[in-house]
Length: 217
Image 1 (cartoon, rainbow, N blue to C red):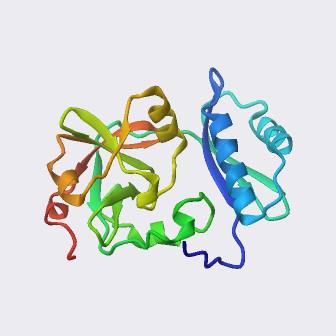
Image 2 (tube, rainbow, N blue to C red):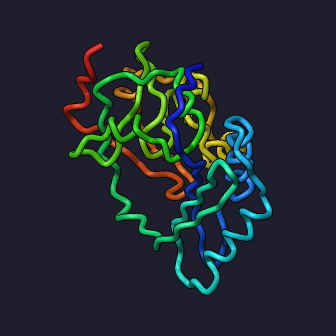
């Protein structure tokens, strides 16, 4: 697995919070961050992180989108913004112009080093599907992907080169989705497509028409 690291990056989690329900999937977010801290040899103290999150939402009475960041020395930074989920219209989904490198370690850990996602962005799309040179769809720049194929909701396996999302993890545990290979051809013929993440949960998506022809391989 490729492990060429930029000089500075923080561990990152994006968490939904509401006054009624609190932090959504917080234990899963912190467990994932702790695994990444162990991998990158970052200091991490869960109680310190929880205290920082609690301070950040103190006095707030509207749902928030929270960015939790932890630096190499364990310093915690929390940014809050009002949660805006959009109109509920299907996402316009493109397909990245070039394949990812599935050995890139930063695909498997959520950090502030997100150049591979930024490079895939397309201005006329809400989100973009990443894929491998073997023609496997992996994830999108904003979340995991789920496609309906032969009556099953299928999400690509982590080994394909993707982040194990917390909501994806929850859906697998509930038995609502299954892991399986999803090729670009499968994506184009799927009866339904969703982007899933812990902020929006299920976001229906439609391939943008020019994307149907796919990238050159």
